[in-house]
Length: 491
Ligand code: ADP
Ligand code: MG
Figure 1 (cartoon, rainbow, N blue to C red):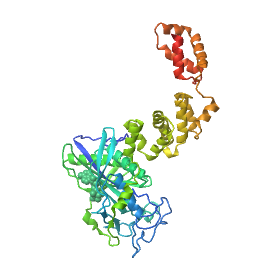
Figure 2 (cartoon, helix red, strand yellow):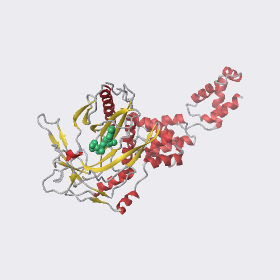
Figure 3 (tube, rainbow, N blue to C red):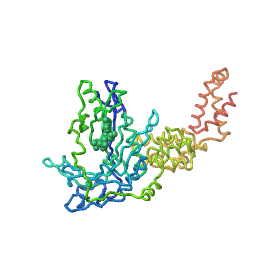
Figure 4 (tube, rainbow, N blue to C red):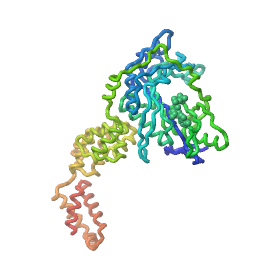
């Protein structure tokens, strides 16, 4: 069996048989960013002691009644708008019945035939260009509790803190065709929700997980193959590994003359393989029916429009604006808008600084620094204000780009003001023509043999002189001026 390459060089499905293509559809479960749960006022805060955020509703005491949380409804609608989707003015909460130890109600309140959000689409920015991916629906549902198997050697423990937390299930059309597209899709959905502040997108804390549906078919074939669904995968890397394994498995089965059974599978992150959990359940297995404790949810146009009118600028629009207004390349714009915090930092820096230099410094030096220290941009050791100052010092010729790099390194140690660093260390660029002329003369005089060679046609030596001058000046000579003066002297 082929496996994903060890160095995680992303995006490869190494398949023995490239007659096949893989088809992927994702059901993303995104935790609604909300202080309280979908039908109760318990806190949703992450990391609390087990069973300390559980109301009688969340623990399903008989006779308790769910009360819808209006804020969660708004969050779902906003997300729907961000996904360019149809908002359904009438939606219905259903009971999805199944037994699980961490599901005390014996059913999950979800939305089945009438979700709050209908069809929509998102655009992926891929190296090959833009790709539109269809959204089938977005519905609201409750999360279950958590079974804990590794604390007590004899018993399974249950933590109900998560029970009743609002989730948005975002179901894509089977439009994804590669690991790269899956990666771009998850990042795009996450980015949109973070812009909207409807989900924090924190995959480590489980705020974003996905069921991954995978099928394969011969290239050129119209009909979709039978899919397998891999449950509850909680990182992009695992999604990619699971898809890679699963697609290869299916191709092998088909090539050996077998057929794919529609089933629910589990991804074993230790063994890096998917395993059958159960044959795929059908909707009728769940005995869905409208929850008699909850009325259909009906929205007025005013309610929806009010939310529409207050949607912030989203990544696609921001990208367009960055390209048009700041003349960035699509590539640069993409990098700067994909994370809302990065875009904020960028806009803060360019408020008072040259856009081109700022873009280069942010996507170059700053990203490298953050990467090296494994920091988010919100934790950047260099504030936008100070970076902006540094860029102005480059722009007005106070320091050269090269000196700026050393100043940047010192700034990274604790957000120091670049102006102060330059003063303290005497790094100011030498731009006085008289002073520079002295240095040029000195270097020229000391290298008369090279001057002769230069004059007899060895023009490459110009670089040698510049190098010497920079050395004598301690790297502080203004390069443009040096070039000019040197040319004169060597005429
Ligand atoms: P269920 O709850 O039964 O899994 P959903 O409609 O919620 O059904 O989700 C089905 C998911 O499977 C969607 O994301 C859809 O795009 C995807 N899907 C459907 N058919 C295929 C297929 N043949 N190959 C891959 N993905 C598929
Ligand atoms: Mg499913």
